[in-house]
Image (cartoon, rainbow over all chains, first blue to last red; front, side, top):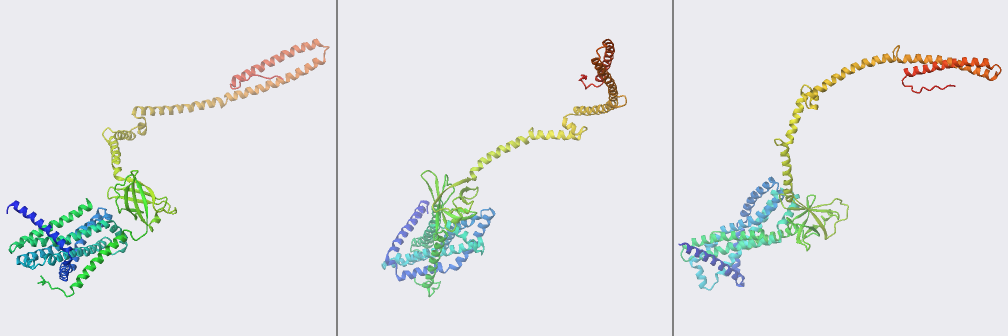
Length: 256
Length: 317
């Protein structure tokens, strides 16, 4: 494969992903997408994406954030900057690290699975059968998965962030309730309307791309079984780049 | 696609997913409510506008602190028409009691961290600050102070360097001090240190010795003078004797004058025997003259011996 061809294929893959996103959005807006079947599919997807992993994921996030917060706060105390430690934890861990890690986790766990599933549907000819039977695969298969993944990422992020905020309080003040006023002031300073809106938009964007890009990548597969790994791999790389880009844009909007 | 081969689908799927979604939205709504509560949306507040010539370092959500406790929050920063910055602070009513009409507000920038707005209330008995009050804010900027401080410090250090450097006045003073202490410890002691060199110190010592000798001879002179003036045969005794003699002479003179009195009375009463009276008179006159001469001589002698008495007039009766 020569380099210009590879570059062209790379751009085409991105273009297909963008086109797929637009088509999926259009399908999501059509009422015929909301049937009992799609709802069940979506619920099953949410169950596998979120509910199934919720306890383990939450415990993992609590442990990870406990270590990070502990280091941040003790270092800040050493440098005499303890008054800024909690704000730094909120801004860095709660607003940035947790959502990004959640998106990566769901992408690794469910995104790869979805990409493979769609690629296998392509290889087995199942999608072609649906199209020949005049059934829109977007409405029936893709939109429920995309919506469910977005909701899953959102739910996992919200629950993890809440747990991490409890951890932050415990690490900073211990089990002493008298730190609540100061904690609230820091929350007020960090979680303004813009920060909360930004967090929600970022979570939904993460959730959408975690489903959209793997499905688009799965559609890149052909009837050849060998095309499936290539399609999934390309999709995962694009997903990683997109997640990083969203995080970068979010940071730029907030702080630049 | 309907069958999920490896993970069993639970029967109450709908309930579980509903629970998860419900929990998520409850947590999200609860957090938003908490954030609103933390931002003071649910409590009554009052506005305070701080006017500053520079709002650098002030950010939205910054605290207004009183005695180290945050009592208000910056909600708006704007540039007024006169080019001054207006910092609007929202203070909850329950914390507004710390702010009085006489309160002073400062905006300080430290080396580390952002700016800080502080309130100082000197007298908490003053009337409370009204809602919507506008106050000037005093600025103190550590970073602006630093260059000036460094300049002052540099000139101070240069001065110290000049003082302590080789040939500096401190070195000279120390050298002088060392010379002085050496002299104090030397043969002439502190005198040498005071006078600066040994020659002068020697002179002073010699002068003191001479003064001692002089004092010794002076005491001899005084003893002799004492003897001459007050001792037997001295000036005082001679004077005493002369005074005694004068007393005797004066007595004689008084006697003579009494007789003159008598004779004059005789001369006045007796006019017949004028010739005899005239002869007696001549003799008497000669006697008076002699007495007067004696007195004159005596007075001269007293004057000579008693140098302080200059008035040599003698009143005759």
